[in-house]
Image 1 (cartoon, helix red, strand yellow):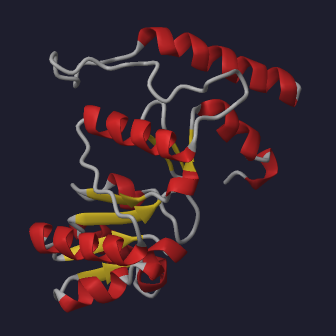
Image 2 (spheres, helix red, strand yellow; image 1 turned 180 degrees about the vertical axis):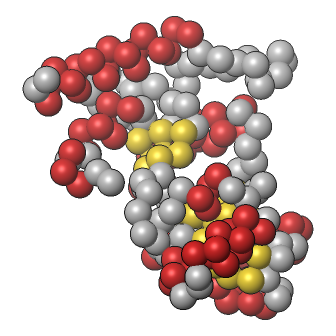
Length: 198
């Protein structure tokens, strides 16, 4: 199948899926508006702020909790507040520039929480690494992309960005930058080169 044919099928499936939205988490008093932040014209994405607003609304509607920060210092303050609330004993973390900028490792160390990332886990025997990951009560990751239309996080698994961080711990904290938010699946697929996928 040629790339253009594949992308056309993705666009068609995405458009078809919009007609069958699941709204079970949306309170009756606040019905979901599927036109909110939709592209003004085919091929034109909404403004970044509209994408972010729609993404936040979709995550909240699905039962997630969002915290908005206007700057990295605000984001760091929010991280400290969340850690004080959750009080994790151990956190399974990605290696990512966003987490470095938030000083996640230092924030966990201040609270006596064990910091587990690829570098730390690679130094352990396989069974010890597995046990440590299973004991983590918080997963902290960045994202590769986020989709505004559905509130979806796109996480590509690789050494340093293991999917275990979002799947094993009971709580997952994802750091999303506004520039990473796309409208839907179509522009996402166009950004991936098949040879680059893990």
